[in-house]
Image (cartoon, rainbow, N blue to C red; front, side, top):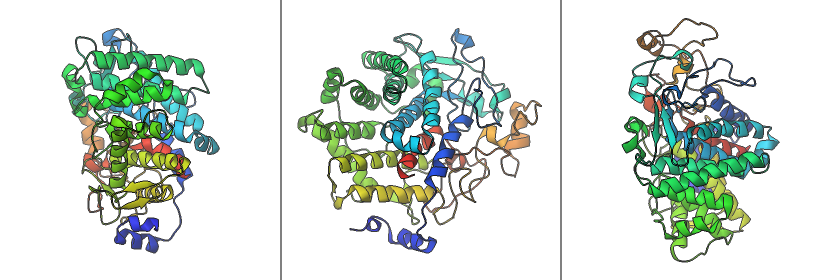
Length: 480
């Protein structure tokens, strides 16, 4: 069966019209890692490559007597939201674990490790005690009321935490997963740092499962990334900790946990599919049984991938132009995360000399990779609009990204203060391209009809986020 039979006829014809040339995945990979330097908060290092950015938020944590300088801004605003921040680091680490050799071959492994470490160094600061974790700096409402550069923002930098009296199993669980995955990424190059990360991960998992609760109930200001439940983060963290440690404690937890059923997405809010895919890998490797509750993990993981590649019972919608379609708001975040699962699983199947048995036909590892490649090509410009949704890649890409730092003149060129409302008047409403390109940012993407409105106020389509690009790093490394 040809890989193209997995795709809508219209998209197959589109590909023929556009020619067979592949995208430059290596160039896109380089830009994807530059993106994380544009999102940095704190004191920038001497080797900073995104030169329009400057130091910012150097007093973070002062209100709580804690050093919370560093980390990443999540999207086009200036808040450090811990929940998606941790998911970002987990997925960056996954890419390095699976495709470190490919990253090294493209001379990008060092940059990927730096991107991970910028996040984990911050998490170490934020995890001040075994059962205390600072989960946010800044207030979303106050931040969104202003349009300012991070370098001279005037909005409050309030610090918010979870603890035993104010739990957040989802936040602690996701951060535990990030620590565990990052510990694997650093296990060879820096064993001491790896051990430190793993220790934090174990403590946070214990905290998460002992003191149960939704983190937004303890940090109401986290409403912009409210969690729909914490059970998935606990399973996700246990899977990563088992992968990192081989400790039977985590197998015991996974064996008795709710497997989650077949999910409709893999995202910062829903980690079940990621955990299911990891457990499926454990089954392939003989690390857990292929019976009882374990087989449910594998079945649900494979059903999700079958649905993604259009061979399942409940396939993910696709646009006429051939793009996977989940939601109108930042749709591409769901695409890039699903692609990381798909290509990883394809490689694991290949190693096991196996295929994916879907309800509507058998799919080979090569066909899974081919499907992923076509989705990547769509993102990089092989689509009905001929637009790359990765900024700085290709001849045509979004010019008015919904991104404060990008849309305002660099402080290195003009040090005059950009005020809270003055930023809206002078820069947000400006009908012109952003003065600074956020290379490697992936915009929210087109609508379900393959249309894109390149307008700064259009945050549903025109805002990028770290969770968009983080899984794409591993995907691009695999294809480059």
